[in-house]
Image 1: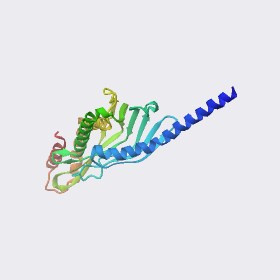
Image 2 (image 1 turned 90 degrees about the vertical axis):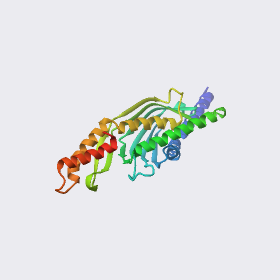
Image 3 (image 1 turned 60 degrees about the horizontal axis):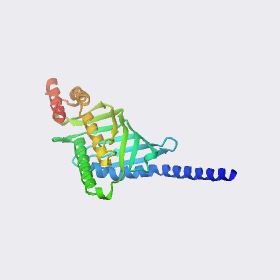
Image 4 (image 1 turned 60 degrees about the vertical axis):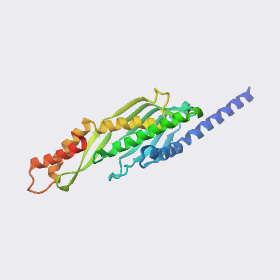
Length: 258
């Protein structure tokens, strides 16, 4: 009896060791995936500094995610996030579809920049759409050879975000305005297809993010601040208050069409 207990106990130790070893390597795997595939999907610089793993809860803590701007935009970054929490369904790690219980993006700092008739996040979204389309075409072409890993996210959350707008107004002066980003909660991303490619998941997420960035809740507040700050940014007695407000309003209108 004792012999069997020793054998069973030994097997449990081996299993636990394998699980812990596998999960402890999950951090470097996530970091490499983000830093390798992120730029290919967005066509911009994407950099993740570090990933911490909780072995008990199978929760990953992604630290300092940086999203650069596409070519043609001058802002140093499109978005920076200090902390992202990711809860993985550990049973799905070895399967064809990795199931993520929750992704929680906390306090993203978003820089919105307009150039001509486009803006930085529209450009990024177009890049992501192109990547998703290419991924779908490739998947259909290689269907006979089998598909790669897919993703399904039960809950994707963005909260406590902020949108910063840098803009030039009448007279060449510049001003900045900020607005809170409405929270986002997407459910069952990729579930309908039994799992989606990383490109398809990114397309869904960026489409919703862009919708919130350009929503009335954001643009109305930015417009309000722009009008208030314009009188401080533009100096000179030859320009009246109404003219200043109109100049700021026209600038915001060219940005948002509102």
